[in-house]
Length: 199
Image 1 (cartoon, one colour):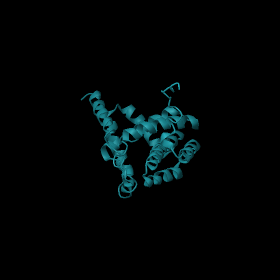
Image 2 (spheres, helix red, strand yellow; image 1 turned 60 degrees about the vertical axis):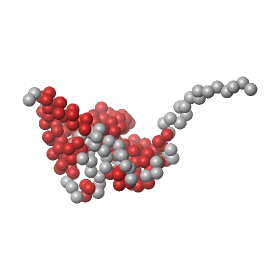
Image 3 (tube, rainbow, N blue to C red; image 1 turned 135 degrees about the vertical axis):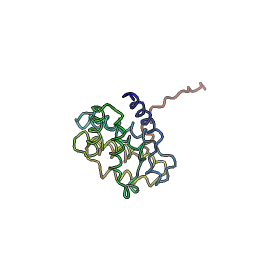
Image 4 (cartoon, rainbow, N blue to C red; image 1 turned 90 degrees about the horizontal axis):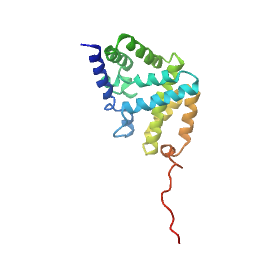
């Protein structure tokens, strides 16, 4: 087996993130939650922005979040209730060790080092990446709350208590205070396409 055979398997597994769904919000009544791939993409974008705002390496923050949830393809997504009974951190590390064995050793070590910075929050980039992860969940929860899923307020409250960076705290405060966060991005962008008839 060549190194490219292992890479092929890892790419197949990465694709699986599109089919693994966040389970926690099902507790609040969401029938079809967002996928892990959805969460990873947006959290990486947020991590880049927060990294810039916090004066740390934004690329490193984004890369951390691009890889931070790959373990879910093997162990699934676990919400905080199931995590009461399972050793999810140990399972995540075990899954990642096997997954990244498909990469060249130096590359695997680099990715695992980055992921561990987020897990341990022992670097500024790791703290920013974790805040971005949480902030994405709060943003998604805010959208669900606006759609009538009141139980998702719990995610927003938990994230608010956990955030460490000033940039993430300020953004969450703005998001929380907007009564129509879902639609705020396009309000004012619509261009009228009709002309009034002469009377």
